[in-house]
Length: 310
Image (cartoon, rainbow, N blue to C red; front, side, top):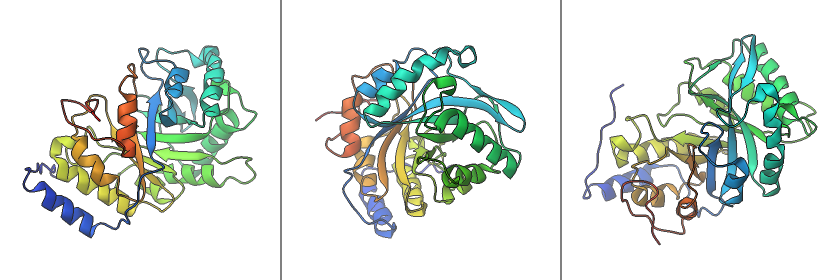
């Protein structure tokens, strides 16, 4: 498929926005429930998990990654330079996880990531992984490599071309009989709709949050122009199952002109907020990003998403 290099001039942008809104399927609302989500665990220069949570601006934190599993592989958790799960050192994170949860933040385990050796070979394989995740990371009495039970599972499936059985995994996690608590589920597809790997899993209707990555894909990210971004956003917004919330995913130092994008996408009824891809080692701009995500503040572009003013 050809890349969507459809940059917009200042004159044509209002017309494009009007067309997108007029023909989208959204019912407009305020974004009172919006917030931030992020990833933690792959950058040894980022702050601690508890420091991240205590900023008070995040609703969801994904610990990643479980980047080896499936097809008879022994599951392996990789937290880069933070700690070594195989030695039991990561159980010290239990107090930080519990501190985050006491603040109302959902802490999830993220599966996949850009590196690793993972995939699913059958529906039975998906069910076996489900039981492993429930027993090791999610059950109220589980301790596992992290020393405390988590709230849910995130699918950040990047290092495989197989779309098979992720929908089975999602259904199994969401509908397992007799499990004593809700398992929150999220997914991080690329901005191109439909996502070739996670599309079927998202379409099950069991995924609570979808953080669409509007980066590393010129067919629909900001390098292709604002109209490409908005066209992709509204495709996702109009196509998501009713229970799912949609987050706008940004990489560090993104060049997206959020002052033009956020006022439009916040009108979507399933708008959930902004997902930051992780590796945060400076929290000084997080309050501004949070208020922008929630619609309380205007932004001006001065080279990165961190350039925000009242």
